[in-house]
Length: 183
Image (cartoon, rainbow, N blue to C red; front, side, top):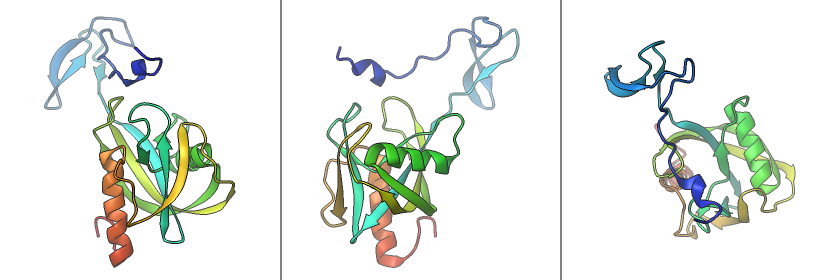
């Protein structure tokens, strides 16, 4: 097993209650089978993890980053990442863009939300923003091995995640029609 492979294993369900340490049991709750505590009524809701990213456009080209680590090393995606517990979605987006691209951004608006079901680490809710570059120096950082702007007709075929492929399709439609997703 490589040093990063352990990060790709899906989290195992809890076995014990985080409140009282009793053994969790499967029970029907809210119309779904869930792990619950028979002693203190704790319910383990297995929820997706929030993540944010941004579409940055320069000279009719969008910025993508090449993944440096698993999953999908070498594939391209929007600069994005998981939200920290104490962050707002926009704070997360600004931090992730700085970490991965070296750029300072100003968020102009929410573009759309996407379900991320094909990341082996976890399911995600990906919030994508439209943003402007306001400073910094373009450089691959954090978990990006490369950063590059791509014309919409020259997008690499190896886009890492389905939500990012959907975002690209939605952005192309937005550029062509002026209509945001869902409009």
